[in-house]
Length: 496
Image (cartoon, rainbow, N blue to C red):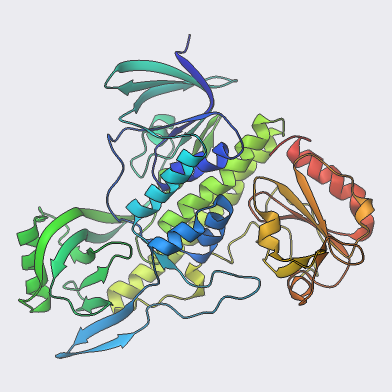
C-alpha cells in the first residue's frame, strides 16, 4: 500500500520539471514534483530565452517577468592585435504581427527557474527539495516509486512518472534506455563571477578560434559576469577566485581584471546525446534526461521547456479520457525536434571553435520548428501555406466591440481553439474545452488591419489550434463534421 497517491510524479525540478508542473497545475491535474538537491540550482548553465519560448512563457503568464528581469544580448567586443571591434552577436530583427517576440532574451537559469517556481506557487504548488527517488516499478495502471528524504523513506503511487532529472538521469538509467551520441572533444569551463576591471556593457572575447579563447559576458538581471573558456581535457581545474583570475590574466594579458568571488562554476565535457526512446509504458523522459546539447546557440534549456509544454497538455488530456494515442505522439513529435536541435548546436560549436564565429540568426529562435509528421494532425491539402503541425501565427485584431486584441490572447490558456476564418459560425457546435472564434460577417473577431488574412489566408477555412499553439487541422468550410470528429478523437470530449 503506497503512502501517497497522485496522478503524475515529476522527478527533477529544473526548467523542464517546473514547466511541466505549471502545465499540469493550471489544468488542475494532481502531481508531485521532487528534486534530490536540498535547494534550487544557483548557476547559469543556460541563459538564452529564445522567441518561441517567450511565446510559451506568455501563455504560462511569466513572459513579462522574464523580460523585466533579463535583457537583450550585448554587443561582442572582440580583442585582436592590440585593439578591438564591436559587433552584434544576434542578427537583429523587429517584431512582426505573426511573431511578436523577435530577439532572444538573456536571463541566467537560476533566475528563470525562480520565476517559474513563483508561478507554480501562485497555482498552489511547490517543489519538494531533498527528495530523492531511489527506485520505481510500473504495472499496467501506474508506477510505484520509492522516495528518500531526511525524514525517511516512503512510497508514492502515480498514474504516470516523468523523468526530468538531467543528463545523468536516474529515471533513464533505471529504464535501461540507451543514450547514444558523442563526446565532442571539448571540455569547457563556465563560471559566474563577481569581478571588476571590465569597461562597458559588452560580451568581451579574446583569442577566438583557439584553445586559449576566453569570454566574459555580463549576466542580465545580476551584477555578475559569466566566464566561458575551453580547458584541458584532463586534470583538475582551479575553480577558486585566484585560480580563475590567473586564467583570465594569462589568456587576456590584462592585470586589471580582479575576481572577488565565484558564485558558481563548472568544468564539463561537451556532449551531444539523444535518448533512443522517450517513453517506456507509463514513464516518460523530458529535458536533459532525453537530450543533452553543447551550449552554443542557447538551445538546450529552450528545447527542455518545449518538451514539457508538449507533454503537459497531453498527460492532462489522457487523464481526462483522451486516447493513449495522444500521449504516444509526444515521442513522435519531440524526438525529431531534439535531433534537429542537436545538429544545429553541434554545427554552431564547430563554427565557434574553428573560426571564432559566434553570430546567431533565425535558425536558433525555434519559431520554425513544428510537427509536420504529427500523428495528431488531420491530413490536409498539399497546396496550403499554413499546414497542420505548423506553429499557429499571432495576429493583432479587434473584438466585435472594437477593443484591440491578438490571436495569442485568444489562444491563451489550457484550451483548444477553433479559428473560423469567414465560415458560418453556426456550423460548429460548442464543445467543452474548445473556444470558437469567428471572423467575417457577425464574427466576434474583426481583422481590421488584415493581419489574420496575411497569416492564415483569405479562403474560408477552419483552423483547429492545439493547447500548445500548433495547428491540428485545416479544413474547408464544408468539412465541419470531419473537423468535429477529429477534435473529439483527440480530446476525448473532455478537458485537455
